[in-house]
Image: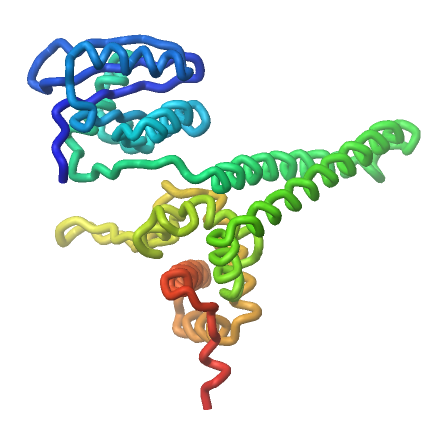
Length: 335
């Protein structure tokens, strides 16, 4: 693992960036700079660092992954070939232990020290290619539209409980709103398909993923976004940890022996999609259907068996992506 002589911790907010320069962790004073969260502000950080006449290949920039707010940093560092590490916020929060109070200046220093003390976990980051970014933004908008549609459709529950002349205008407005939202939803779905079709690598992996029983269009698109077209995770088990479907042991010594369970720290949307995929696969895939029935008859909890099917689906997807051949149900060829 490469050792960096300078660590820059950056606390990201919507409008500003707090940066702390750590040259020597044993020192008490670490330079601080406050700039705007835009390209001009990032250039100011770089200009201040140049004053120290340091080789930029010996510098690592670290910041919390705050989604769209940290994207200007990621794009700038990626464009200028600077080493950076965007760290999940939950990791930094858990590593701090008990603390009293907080401010952005101290948070920036905490980020820098996290990077130093956890250098064995360091994985240099890159910005997803343009098509992946587009898919990510479109999928996010798609989710917002779906939530709005579901919210408006729930307003029809007043039908049958209130006089028609009271709710007539509301029902009419809701219908128009839902119709407009569904039109926008169709447009987004159309653009997503066009992006997939225009990128040969994404289209190939998308087509392969959807050959796995239970994996539909939306599940495949979401997996491509989260795995950056299956390049971000080494294997299916790592992705299963991220999705919150990999079970973990809970024990200590000889007296504490809890049941094995999945973690609540997960991508809830991905977990939901995998649940739908597992239900579909259980219904339409003979091998998984027989597996489910057999395990339940053995006395296994139904949800545990369903979770095992989620893991099987992920393992199948990663296997066919690695070998670049469609999924083949070998059971139908069995004697």
